[in-house]
Length: 108
Image 1 (cartoon, rainbow, N blue to C red):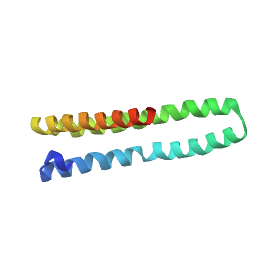
Image 2: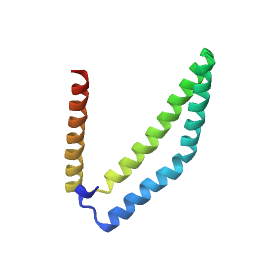
Image 3: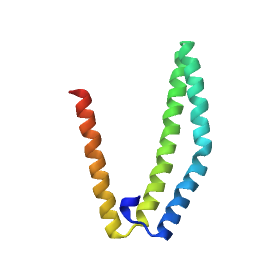
């Protein structure tokens, strides 16, 4: 966020957006934690039907988290100036490039 040179108002708005998202996703995170515990128990018990059910539920919970996080990112992005958006896109592209390079190193 420092590279975006946000104004104080933008910093406060971003803080609010991401705090609200954390609060809104708190119940989902708790469900994910419970699901992981139950899934580990099902794995240890070799309960395949329970593994399948809990794995599906886990995917749905992760999907809900992704929606919440992506909505927050969209709100954040919409508050940026055109110059800040360009910088954010550049930083994101650089980050993706670094991650792809790391994956290639691990493979090779």
